Image 1 (cartoon, rainbow, N blue to C red):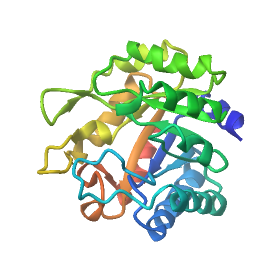
Image 2 (cartoon, rainbow, N blue to C red; image 1 turned 90 degrees about the vertical axis):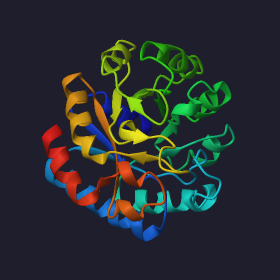
Image 3 (cartoon, one colour; image 1 turned 180 degrees about the vertical axis):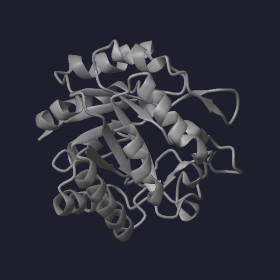
Image 4 (tube, rainbow, N blue to C red; image 1 turned 90 degrees about the horizontal axis):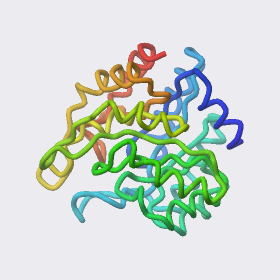
Length: 261
């Protein structure tokens, strides 16, 4: 499954990593997955379902984090089985990839952790695709070194994701030259269109954001040659547990994907 999926992701067709930021409930996951299947069938695009079982890097200790690994794993398995969608989720510690490998198709390395050698090696050793998100303090060219750690562990199925760089306090800016720079490393490059419009920690103990810029981020990334697009979405972002201000309304997702295909 992993090799077949990676071949699809390295083709000329754009692909999409989409889902709610955090696993709030099984009902939410089903609602989003049903829409993703509808879009996939209509437009003939590859869609990977994404949601996090644990938001381990929340701004505040009081923020909701998700159901945890064991329950989250079962939720992802249900979505994968019911809708025949590949699935991905964040891994934060080196013991987690092994526990998730029977379900997860793509191991996602959070931006803050992209230089954590033990985590990268553990993800690589599963034989699954490893999506490394570029840290907010690194350049596109710097991503050579995290990707090398995975490849040297015997896994050449690497993806790299652009998600903006810190620009002073509580703000990000995207240098789209990072996309061709990372393409030069020989791996598919994804544009994280929703995390790139975050205002990290800038909303009084939680992260703010500007979802109105998400379509522009996606279209600019297309112009710079991105292979895939990461889009967090929610039926009602105002009620989302995490990253509500930068998540795309589920009702707006189809139109944006149409523009990118």
